[in-house]
Image (tube, rainbow, N blue to C red; front, side, top):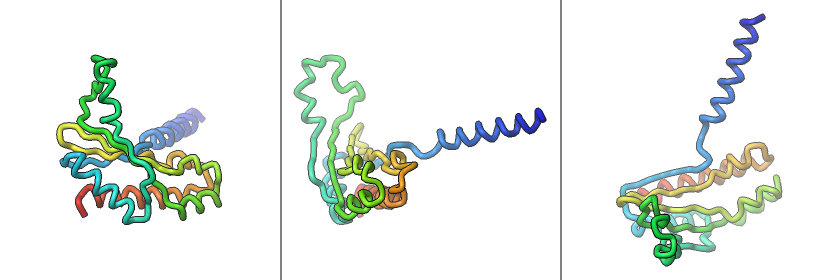
Length: 158
């Protein structure tokens, strides 16, 4: 009986570890190119794939006016750029609302691009993680796959 109990405990621990060690909640993709060069390509890539940018924020420029006020606490990570875009696809929004209206909390989606030492990284919160137990999961996985493919393609200049 002790062996069965130990095996069962081990299986529970391993299954917990696999969830914990699973994919990150944030998709990250980096290229060794400056943000100013990459940003417009990502914008165009999203729009070419049917995701329309509805709002842009140049976070780095916006917070730079606070450098004196924040002093040593300003930009400790030494990022040379931070820009975000908010985007949406009406078809996906409709499909998600048909399956689970609560998941419209994900709409519109957003992505942030950061630059450090000439390297640009895209950061995109994975909808599939939030929707893990939602009936909308399959459609949100499809959406996530399309967005991450568009990010990779456009950041590589294709």
